[in-house]
Image (cartoon, rainbow, N blue to C red; front, side, top):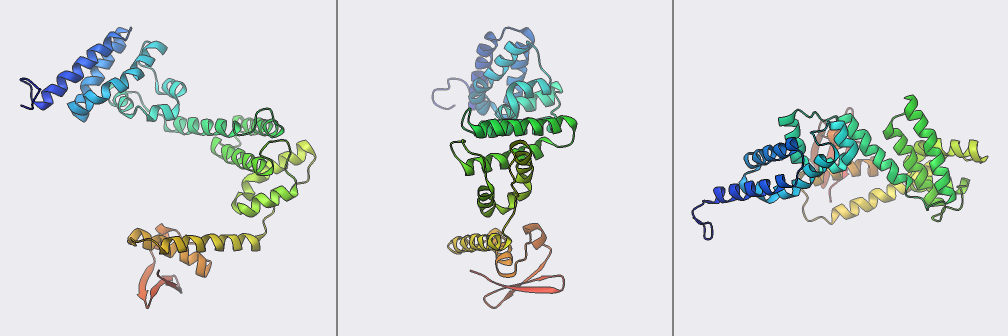
Length: 298
């Protein structure tokens, strides 16, 4: 027996400790059904994670059951839990949620979970503007338009969040204090830095044109955008060349980056695995269809 354990072996000691903590926790729960549920969860935790981990974790999960007891006095549905705790809150209690699913039949709703996450990201975006500023008022008004489209079923929460994020980024890029709306120069400056946001920001510029009599046009200087992209790829390759470990994952990433830098050919890692790649001198030769591309290897 380990020193200090008396007549108990290690597993028995931690099992007793966990059960004592379960009993103490049950004393703080007012509803009989929730007291029993906490006890059943504790026994499941012992079986699932082992008595040592269960004893260490049980007090952490007690607050979850206590909050359920105070809010519902029963085992709630998944939608009720999601509304109360949010997707992020439920992620912090994965083991109790797993127990609720396996032992209590509480079925997770993955679509509702995804929508809840999007809603919280939308709220964070809306809070990014200086309070009561012109930018804040404009972004809130734009969100009302997007929300109407969500309710009408013409757009999704994800699309609305992407559009709202682009609008917020443009507003902050224009004036951090939020006292000025974008002009064409601001739009051009923003898109020169992030040309891929042209489509996302179009809805917002259209909104400004209608509501604030602006004449904004999202336009991308393709030549300048390609130059910036080339510079970014060059920096990435320089950083990668300094890596001490250059395994298979590094090699895949290098080839993907080099294909775009040297040959203006975008290819994903997944697609790359279906192509013929052969060593060739100080580099590799990638064959895609009828075309062959040589690339140096750092």
